[in-house]
Length: 416
Image 1 (cartoon, helix red, strand yellow):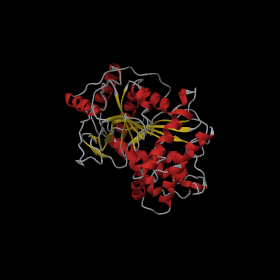
Image 2 (cartoon, one colour):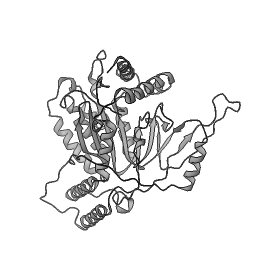
Image 3 (cartoon, helix red, strand yellow):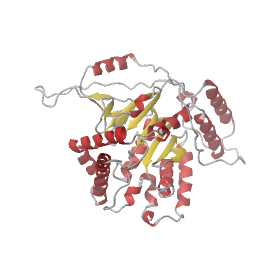
Image 4 (cartoon, helix red, strand yellow):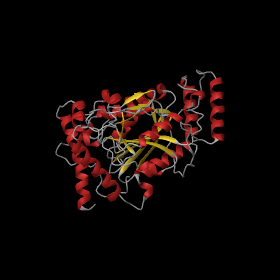
């Protein structure tokens, strides 16, 4: 990376480090964050640095290892190539073995989905890189958007409601009327096709068969506690999404304004995919990172995916203990990990919102009991396993305050 790239990387890493330092020195984490988002100059500098790093300094001919390509491939594998069908059947066998029932049925749409486009929420998007894919309806949010298509939003503060409200500030701060008018968009849950009809029929028939069996019947079949890693993928077909007349009218009205949009509410159970790309490193405290993941869980539909990209240029086993703990923590939320891959400069992980939270809580509790007795590197010995249910740690949490953070690789494939 050239001198300019290193300077931009230091802006990003320096921002992260200052926030974590304040929390580690005893300041209230919520107050640290609230203070941070009030400094528009800092947000602008950070957003500009990330945007320029992604578009000018992380270019590579190895597009298959870019973070956006990696996420897109994983999503297609799951929704288009039969992975959702497979893991759903596997979870249903698991529930039968445990004597548990799924928390939705086929009428809820958690199995029989016929979508044209996938609803994707890109958190900390900056410049909306997923907009290039026609098979997504993207909601891109960031503290300080670098593109008009990205909506201003503080994900830690955003409210979750039954209906999402898109808030548009239309007045100027110093206008004579000193007023702002807001227009709301009801986020309409569109239908879109991710599974071929044969796959849908296969799952529905499997569900009906399983539901007819006795829930507490014993089986000698070995039930796996985790879902297998997905494989390489291709592409998803383009489709058109239906829109409510009222939503269209609001969108047309919003287009007439030059003011940027901000989002204050997001709709519960609305999204098929939530993406955290280089997000958790920005969030200063373990508790706040957990809250982000909890919020993602509530925003996802059953069977929806949380895709996490976290930077790490070290060898795969250097921080593997922390990522095992992520799997456990997210298991207590009701997620199961369906894909994990360590590339040269980042870890890619995909977690699926299960159909029965209790089943994955049981797995997480057992795995936590086992990991308590595991020998770990000395720098991780300070981890309190009693807090794992509501905290998420990153490698930078265990660096000395004077250490340099390895968060933004100096030389890496395109991560955008």
